Structure formats: structure tokens, C-alpha cells
Amino acid sequence: MQVLIKSGLVQPEIQKWILCAKNSSGEIEYYQTAWQLTDNSTIEREFGALERIHDNYPKYLLTTDSFTQNRNGVKHLNVFNWLLGTNEKQE
Image (cartoon, rainbow, N blue to C red; front, side, top):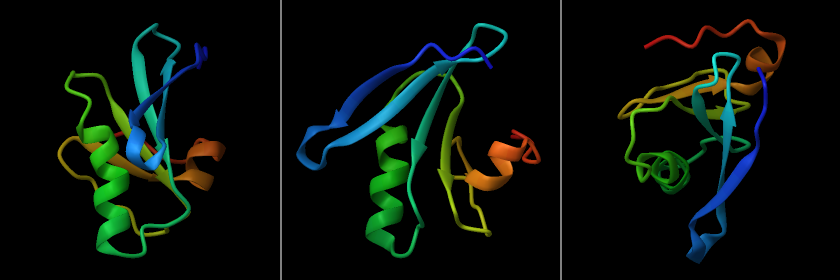
């Protein structure tokens, strides 16, 4: 992945940043990171940051959780598997 890094403050009230990167095909991808999704408020905050971006580029939430869930087009991936390249970015 060619990384053209841009970050943007999407929720100023809680300092929520999103990484915007270009993949090897030159297409934009968005990444949000969190340690774990331990409760509903964390889930809403982390997915919500990506759901506020209204375009059709892929959006990924990377956490240390072993059980992942997708929501409203946002792909939830385990960060360790993602780093090792063992996660498939599937619909």
C-alpha cells in the first residue's frame, strides 16, 4: 500500500481523528483505530466517526478485538491480523 497520509478531525468535541490513505491502486481508504470495543458508547463513537464520512470509499475500524463486526459499510478488522496480512477485506 502506498500511503499518502492525511488525517482529519471528524469529531472535534472528542478529538476523533481518521487516517485517509491511498492503496496500491491509488484509491482512498479510511482507517480508524481503537484498542477494544468494550461497551456501546465506545462502539457508537468508533463506528460513528467513520459513518459520518459520506462517500463510497472503503472504511476500516482496526481494534485488538478477536471477534469483529461490520456495521453500515464499515469493516471491523483485528489490527494484528491486518498487520500480518491475514485479514481479507471482504464485503
